Image 1: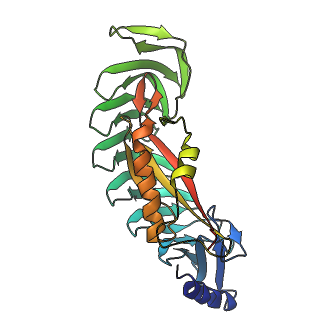
Image 2 (image 1 turned 90 degrees about the vertical axis):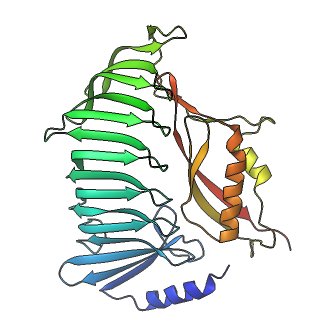
Image 3 (image 1 turned 120 degrees about the vertical axis):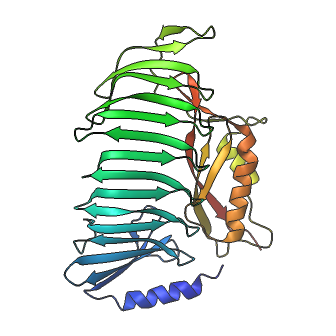
Length: 322
């Protein structure tokens, strides 16, 4: 991997740091670190006249822009102004405006494949009127419509277009009767709410199609990995993941990357996103292993039906003896 040239350029920036130019290396959690070898991002903040600071964050090692944000303070603690962020593949991730660290106005977010994910209007970090969301296959996912007091309706849909839930909102919280449906559009559960809290027993649809009370109080069950050899997912990764042909990690180092992916309500693995790539060959190896393991996932469950489940997984490639 050709990291040395980029790191050398970034180190030149550090030597030139002044009262109007702040630079730092960041780890995966966006914390400042001293080591460029362990950094996943590089941050450069510049004083922009009297308006505050503009921070540009870059992915490492590729050096492409991850985000551009504006702050009122040198500590980069209070966001104020437009913020733009990008996925590691270069597609836009989000664009919107902060006022005093709170979202205001129109915010747009995008999936890793470039499809629009969310469109919302905010007032002081709260949905002001409408929020509409889509799955990565362009099927509508959610719709929220509220008045100035946060009263209104919310509906959601599965990836196949079938309705998933519907209910009222009061002061932006679930209120009254909410209906939950399975991915065939059949009623699975009815739950009563007051101020986002469940009231009384849930009603679940049984095998005869009848609504019956249940003592089930679980918020949900995560997706389950069921390998024929009884491997856990971590064991599967350990036994399957390897350095790509012709590549290896040098100098007793560890190459790490983080991936997001979703297990759908039908158990399919979709939306694989390399959050912080390290090299095309390694990125491809991780994607291949995730896709191959997709056949062993069983969908998550919530409210008497299967539902989508978002996964976040870190991968490590260990140095090998030459």
